[in-house]
Amino acid sequence: MKRETFGSRLGFILVSAGCAIGLGNVWRFPYIVGQYGGAAFVVIYIMFLLIMGLPIMSMEFSVGRASRKSITMSFQELEPKGTKWHWYGWFGMAGNYLLMMFYTTIAGWLLLYFLKVASGQFEGMDTAQVSEAFITMRSQDVGIQLLFMLIVVVLGMLVCSRGLKNGVEKANKAMMLCLLALLVVLAVRAVTLPGAVEGLKFYLVPNFHNLMYDADGKFRLFEAIYAAMGQSFFTLSLGIGAMEIFGSYMNRNFALTGEAVRICALDTFVAICAGLIIFPACFTYGVSPDSGPQLVFVTLP
Image (cartoon, rainbow, N blue to C red; front, side):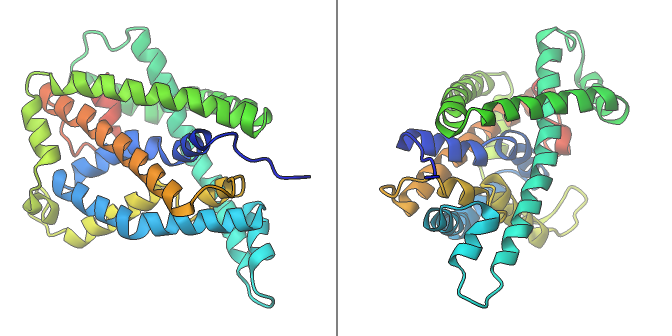
């Protein structure tokens, strides 16, 4: 059977970007930036995107498009006889399963919080109470977390069951455009909050002392550099063959490097917007920017 291809360049960009864009940008990027001192960390992160993210994404696209196979079969198709490159396919498959376990759990939290916010459960709470609500949800509400994780899994399966063009591509076009519009609206709202200037200064004006030393004066430059490199891989879903999968559906008329540049640019735009939303709000409402994984779940409500 001939392998299906994307119906348009926009569809390919939005679907591939949809894999790269998401929790790594909206949830993880702000709290990692907050932990490592703000703007200086962003500079290191963008450097790794350029020198490592772009080339590796282009290579993953090339393997997928050349083989037109799944991640486990692509290296068997392309590897020189007698080599063991096909072993990577199994590691990549395992990595994708582990990533989905992680993503579906956090996506379940987001869906649950959407309903909590929409129903007004955080009305009248201060920052400490919202933080306590998140801690309680993580430690005690295991059943409700599993339920919302399953809802996310079922929704994903329903979309995938409709195929590439009628399912994944069509759904991503609508959802990604809505996400981009929502981010812009929230960013405009956040930067106009009282006290937003301090948040913007933290996020946009590099302070390399904050990058090199934590609040207790402990030297952490190498830890911060490692975190920036890890974030550049995490945000683009690199190293596990995810982009290789999209490359296998890629039209041969598309330029590999050109598509990688467009996806990285869109991914970076979303990450920067997420920071413009979170950090002004942090300083307005008295949320510490180094709050860790709970940062978004405390700041947005």
